[in-house]
Amino acid sequence: MTHPAIRLSITVALTALLVAPGCKKAQDAAVETAIERATGAKVEKDGDTMTIKTEQGEVKVATAEDGGTVAMPADFPKDVYLPADNKLASAMDMAGMQMLNMTTPQELARVSADIEKSMQGQGWKREMAMQAGDGSTLMYSKDNRQVVYQMLKADEGGTQLAVRTGTNS
Image (cartoon, rainbow, N blue to C red; front, side, top):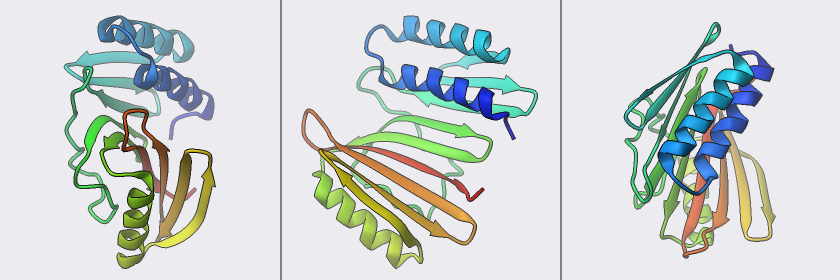
């Protein structure tokens, strides 16, 4: 398991990578440098995938060029609902925790309703539902696993969706 301070540093740097506008190559270089300085970890880049190697393990992050998509991780759980019509902007795997960031043209209320119906239909128990402004959060558990959905109304219409899944700690 990655040390909490290292996880936080990596998460902050990766968040900057995923949301900051501008030149992708400059962003990548800045994020790589920030991660290496903050954590002492080695960062390797291969196409759209960045691998951060620490003594505790690896963190893999794939991010799309402007308007592009990345491939769905092969080991993403099949019983976790994702909208069929989505554009996957990034995928991260950190010590067994996976996080996807995507957009879908579906309205937030529909995405939320589809998540609820699908997850409960597959045996997941809703642990939390919260709405605030133009966004909402849903959390589910099943066996020793947890899934958190964070949704925001997208500026251009549709929904921005972040999905985090992993084991309960």
